[in-house]
Image 1 (cartoon, rainbow, N blue to C red):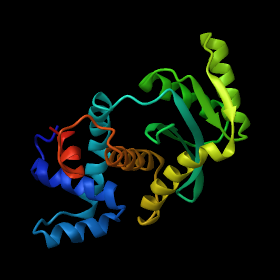
Image 2 (image 1 turned 120 degrees about the vertical axis):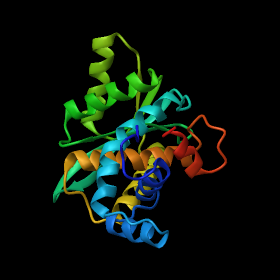
Image 3 (image 1 turned 60 degrees about the vertical axis):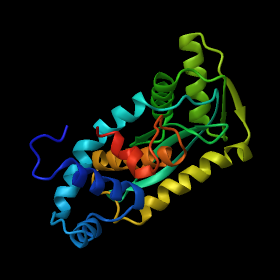
Length: 220
């Protein structure tokens, strides 16, 4: 994964972890690495994040713990290049992250794409709680009809507080940076933030003693 790079794996993973864990700008990470005696340009760190995040996500999903069968599904707004995009997320009853998907539009097809992705990665739920969103409700009904499934739909706003709290955690990390200039970069950065957030919630099968060591193990 890291063969052929000018910096060793330990330096690359540390810089990428700083971005996801603390929501720092790339220039702040450059300064922080400099304090630690590592001279690396902020643009290089940005390239590392873009290149290695999909590989880290792939390894994480292999070792992600199973989640519950009762989900809370919701979406929130994320600004990318001055335009609002939509981050779909779901957590289970215990607050474990089920899945996430950044989309360019808030529509029925986006909700369906997220639902299909979440089920393919985590198996089928028994029940999904949503707010009054018509697109989410439609997506579940269409999935049930097309796959002969019987996923129950429940619309209870206060039960979605747990997923809304997760939204706030992710958006807090984003707010500390300088915003997203590109949709694909936004997707990869959000994926890294979600990975670290899931590690924090003990969703990774690992015997590591710290969040960073658990994150580092994904690059092994």
